[in-house]
Amino acid sequence: MLIQERLVSILMIALVTSLAMLPIAIGSVNPGREIMEPMAAIIIGGLASSTILNLLIMPAIMLKFEKFTR
Image (cartoon, rainbow, N blue to C red; front, side, top):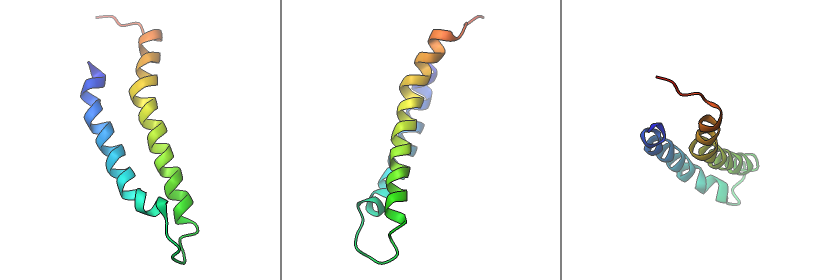
């Protein structure tokens, strides 16, 4: 099935990028991070929502509305 082929690549990309952004999103009081902290939090949230969309919602929509023929 298509979802099983894409599962590892989608999860690994989201996990590695989120782990890279996590130290920035948690933040510190270093000067110059006023813009970086909120942007990193938005990127992590976008990765989470797009992963859920790609793995759960889109396949369900495709199964419901797509006409599969050979």
